[in-house]
Amino acid sequence: MRTISFSLVIIALLFTFSCEQKDTTPDPRLDQPEDFKKLLDAHGDWSKWVNAKGFSYAMVHETNLAWENHYISLPDRKVRIDADAWQMGNDGEKVWISPNRQAFQGNSVRFYHNLYFYFFSIPYIFTDPGVSVKKTENKLVNGISYEAFEVSFEENVGSSPNDVYFMLVDPETGKLAWVLYSVTFFDKNNTKLNALKYEDYRDAGGLIFPRIMTGYQFENDSTKRLSYQVTFSDVFLVEKAMDAALFAMPEKNAVAAN
Image 1: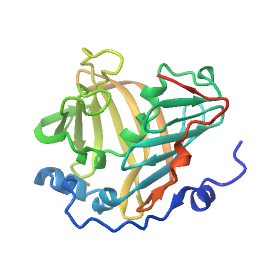
Image 2: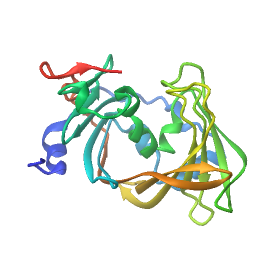
Image 3: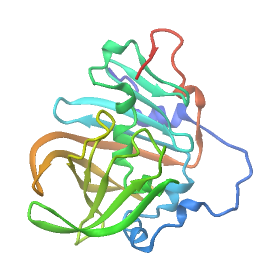
Image 4: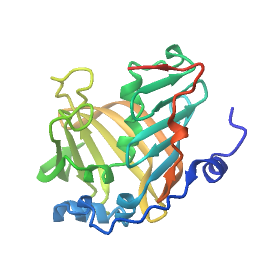
């Protein structure tokens, strides 16, 4: 049970100042195709994402009301997630779970530890080096045609470079409406697409994030059975480095996990 508010934990514990001199060289992530920049611009001042060092948010699984607090060091993508029955993290060398592997009921800790961070951070995360975004033919979802962008990855980028993503743009707002994606983490030959709906955007310090994401099975250009729904709150994005100790595997009651 949480006894201290998530916001107070963020303010009091997580962030440390960096006194290093700032590099004035333009970040290559700012150099994106013009069509993609239009989508990014619809989501706020996305240079804030490029300049940020720390990212955190609270998340609730609406199917069972399980809560999680996520903390991410953006430059090195170290991760920590606090849940009611477990903690997990990536310290930069290994993925770990506490108090033991049995506490987490999912198929893979490595697959799960940055799953929602990745989806929640689209489209910003697709400015990463080694990621290519290009305009493609429109995609249909439930009878509606959407402007679409195809995303691909250079070899050895991420843990599943063969994943396929399509970002579909809301014709009225210009924001991300859907993501169609395949998962190859468990089967590198999988090509089956799933659909993820983005709704109820909220401003978080100049950037726009969805409050609700809903996943569906997807077949014949139509959504089928609902797979999951998650909601987000307490979104913090800051230009200060997170304390590295936050991501370290606990000395006791923790194991490295795949």
